[in-house]
Length: 203
Image (cartoon, rainbow, N blue to C red; front, side):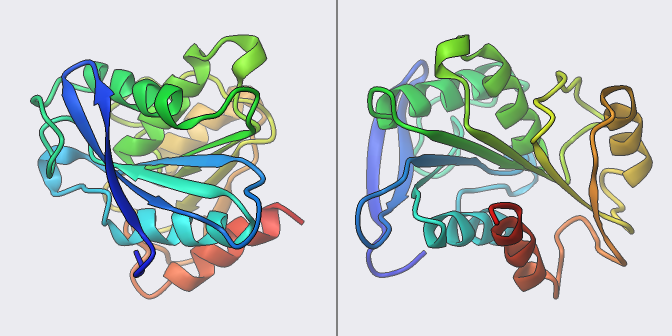
């Protein structure tokens, strides 16, 4: 993401997991783990939306960790239909989160499904401080219910995950959605706005 990004690997259930870590100025207020979109459609830790989420969270004072799912980049293993990818996220959280450290979990598209599912599997005492889901894969994946302070951002004109699918998932939870007018799935031309939405959610 910048000249100060550290590339590291952590041990995962399918082998090494490639991570990119960025440190904030001063002491970190916690760690933010960000999950990338679908590996079989070109999703990597360098995705523009993933980088935008990392920049926003870095600005908010979090140490940010982006990682490649199994079989992507330098991460070992092979695509596992979403099951193993959730295990990858949990392995990164376990490796990178200090004892008692605040955790933010974020994900884009397929990564939103992974982040929500991983969050639901953390023990109560280890739950995430906040969850951010951008264009989450609510049509093709079964997302669990999420905490009521979860930030969900969806493009009005998303042609990959219809806004209607995310509204149908959110409705039984009475969960508000931030809808970006005219926004597509990848938020082309609206990445700065996406970052601003995240920053505003913390104020």
